[in-house]
Image 1 (cartoon, rainbow, N blue to C red):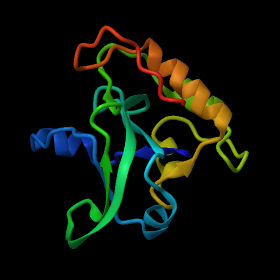
Image 2 (image 1 turned 180 degrees about the horizontal axis):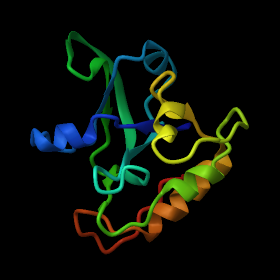
Image 3 (image 1 turned 120 degrees about the vertical axis):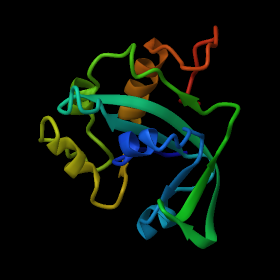
Image 4 (image 1 turned 90 degrees about the vertical axis):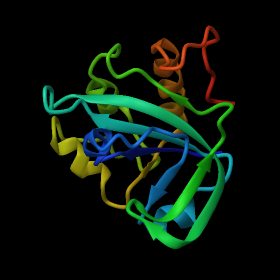
Length: 162
């Protein structure tokens, strides 16, 4: 089981178009399609929007149930990861602080941290559409997620690292 950080670059545009958040992820990255497997975790981040463009938020965590290629591509890409609805979670953006400080702590599987700040963080994450996290990063994100309010009210705190 591996963990990956992904950036939903078009989140605010999609939100304006009333596209709902679900537990699936689509990408045009063939490398991501070849790498991510069932049982892996996708940690989805977004910018904080027009009012705070230099801030970042943790939007959701998706446990990948299935990796598939559609016969017809969607606007988000040809490859689709179907999430496990029972354990994937969406977090409230309104109740969390700027996630940028946490992202600066991540070492990733490569050992290379994000060196950028503000809006440029998005550029650091867009190379192949994802970045593999280290085991230490997964533990940090799991702890952070445990402190966040989940959009769908749940009394039980989730545990993403098994």
